[in-house]
Image (cartoon, rainbow, N blue to C red; front, side):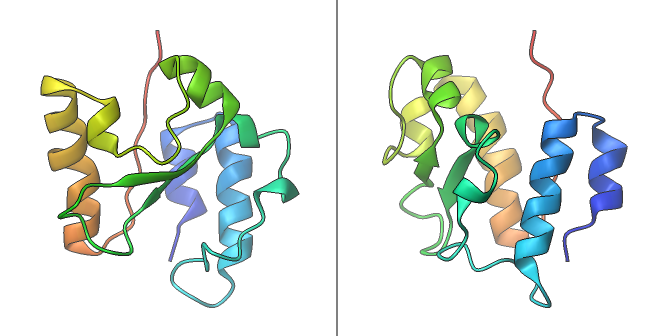
Length: 119
């Protein structure tokens, strides 16, 4: 189950905590929320900064962005919804982020937490 305490150990960012609380509330008594039924418009002030990956069919064909908010798209200078993670990140960044982080979450069947510093 998603652990809000662990998230709060990684960040004091109120937006990240609010998003985590939203996901936890949508989870109910399941291990993960039913992502097909989540209504991101319940958290409208956060939506522009959210992206969603699709792991449901495994990782052999890459991780596809099912959703990207407008702030995320502006950061990358294009709409990334529908693209694969590998199409957005290149070279060493892709290797670090994809193979060493996101793929391991899927392969190990665990919940993953990251802390990203933007400068």
